[in-house]
Amino acid sequence: MRKFRILFLSAGIVFLLVIITLSCRREQKTKGLEPLAQSVPEGFPPPRYRFQDNPLTREGFELGRRLFYDGRLSIDGTVSCGSCHQQIAAFGTFEHDRSHGVFDSHTLRNAPVLFNLAWADKFHWDGEFTTPEHAIAQPINGRLEMGETFSSVIAKLEKDEWYRQQFKKVFGSPFIRPEQVLKALSQFTLSLVSANSKYDRVKKGLDQFTASEQNGYQIYKTHCSACHPEPLFTDFSFRNIGLPVDTALMDYGRMRITGKKEDSLKFKVPTLRNSFISSNYMHDGRFNTLMQCIDHYRFGIQQSPTLDPLLRNGISLTNSQALDLFRFLRTLTDSSFILNPALAKPL
Image 1 (cartoon, rainbow, N blue to C red):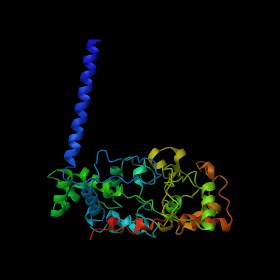
Image 2: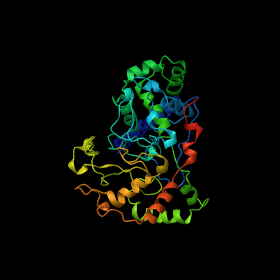
Image 3: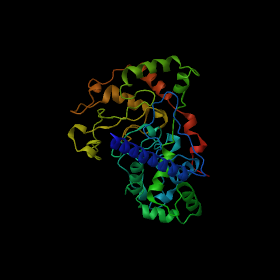
Image 4: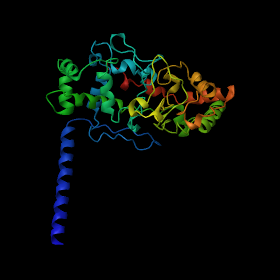
């Protein structure tokens, strides 16, 4: 018994020392920096990503913002993260089907919107990545996106005095490292939170739906909320919604990652927030308008073995109901988010 107590006490001391060491390292890492509190809107569930290994600071956020809009992250200097993820389109691609990369390349998919990502467990349309850092690295290295290597990116950044000073200030290292670039970009992109639409104000009792919007809200709850639940308006699942495959692209979605035929034509369920201003739509940007998306569920669903069971019979809506649903979806637009100068390209 005495030996057991000694061992137990020793283990406890070791554990305490580890906690103290990690706390000291965290404190040292953020010393002299302005901590930022993670934004978690009222009514939202706890986020999955909490910046445990990447302390959120004002300086780190601003470093990430400048990197996000910097064309030097691409091989030809013309494409930044912000080229395909435009603030005017809720950090998606504005009124374009699929994104353009370096040397006028055309990518496989429509760039998804970048907000409320701290609640996601997988990233990209097919869920290929399970960490934001890996998801960010892919387009930087992707030959159809930015086409760069981290060694080349860092060589360019180290020629810039501001970047050298800021990386040293934020990460405490005299040299810029790839993981620091990714962590800074994560601080910016995972801090993009949208939760100030008319819908949100109605929920707080600060505004009211019109009669048409209220009818649309009820239609949404009946026909859409199973896959697009409040308040995030996505369940982050992967589903086949009956889109016929584009024979030129031959993109079968989640199956490309898992290799399982039961995942054929399944793509991540996108959020409905800001959908009114984030055209084009679907993984390949095939629809130009939100009403075309609604009409797909009414008239265009293609039957297949992996079609989501909820859509076997489509969604039956009258023209009036479709218009009401459209008007409700428009209430999910967060104008303060897409016009926020703190998220725009630095001057």
